[in-house]
Image 1 (cartoon, rainbow, N blue to C red):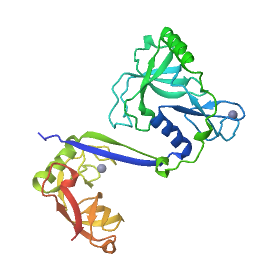
Image 2 (cartoon, rainbow, N blue to C red):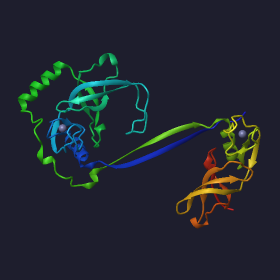
Image 3 (cartoon, rainbow, N blue to C red):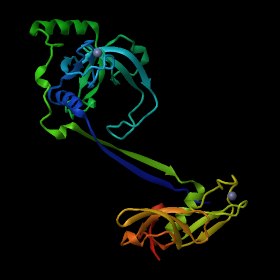
Length: 318
Ligand SMILES: [Zn+2]
Ligand SMILES: [Zn+2]
């Protein structure tokens, strides 16, 4: 019986994108001052949050910052049961969790964010929620961990206390915030995720990889109908839709069919001797000028092999 392989692979995705100074200013206030800023339209007076440069209704440029509260009203909600990758951690977010469109007090648009509550029986449209901030803020919307429900009584008490302490400055323009950002680096957001996969290699691919690992041999599988030898070996012929039958050792040398190259590394379609399909693999050359269609290449195997396509480390000119 064939040993069945599992192949672990981590895909690292890193990105850096320009935030524009509107979003940079929003993020700066959120991170450094734990304040939420919206932009007010000079014509329709709608307050946008998250901020955007132009009013969608009036097509007017938005230039007036106003502070918005971190409490608000749930306008729509859902409970998510399917784990999706959390872009901030690269890991699936534990389910179930609640998400809502929240209209923050002072804003006319809604913010999409997480809820602390995940029991739909305890959620309703119109319920009041309050942001729960993280102790350490990094400058993303994730600095708010989630929104938690607030009881009407608690909210009434809090409002009474705050109206005694100070008259609210909400909704008055904050003119000094409308200056260009001094540090251009703050206009960029860097983020990334690591996506971890475990592939089941299946019977044919496992046997192919085990031959690479244990014998340093390359196998194809022959289609009993069209007689083509498919490499890497696979369990069925995609042209005839029949199971492959014979195992055929191919190569180890082959011929370059096509390639794409950087300085000294190329990826190529390699037609191994005895195969009817091309294998995509690396070709190492000292000089990219050596590469040409029809070049004869030979495989170099890795010293330590683990049942992976990179047990065949690369090809080089034969
Ligand atoms: Zn407007
Ligand atoms: Zn076939």
